[in-house]
Image (tube, rainbow, N blue to C red):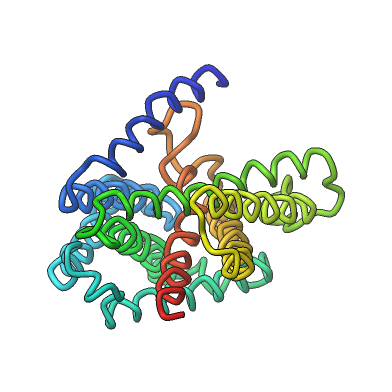
Length: 288
């Protein structure tokens, strides 16, 4: 298993860097859409859909929605005079509202499970609200200040990935070393409050180190630290949400397309929450 994880990571890491830094905007948008549609295929299993036809129908629904959004917001048009397109903010506001609701559902699990688990439509809506804003967030970040620097948006994506990865690594080691109090034992038995705290601290350290090496003004460091803590906390919610849906569906992994790692959703679960909220925070800082 460890060998498989290492080999898969050795393939995925350079592929991800190439995708983020060297693909043209339109092609990047299509690749992001493909990743989201793979996630939709796996989410269809959370919904209890059986058979390729039914599961494929949900993927087609997601693809159609992404196509409509792409017609309204081509990746080149998401920023207007250095500001996020006004109506795109509605999607990110809706996404933020969804993650607040998701936090409550996780907190009340399993008492609240009947509120969403008995209805196919409710689980489908949860999938839409989890996956679609991720696609828009990736497009928004990649196209930021593209006219001035083709790699500026790529760096933003690496920052949000760094926050997620730092939070995961910090949570793992602090949980292993100090973890005594379970965070959400009915959702994910191995996660601890100490691990969550360690993950938040690690993500803040990562961002402050990034600020240091990129000569960011010291005045805004406290603001970025608070926003990073906020994003890191919601990245944990994204992880817990997928764990909750897997538990209800009786699944260990979301899929098997990544040897040693499980499925696509097992890799991007934290990012589904972190990326849209990162976009909200970044857009807000532009108005300061």
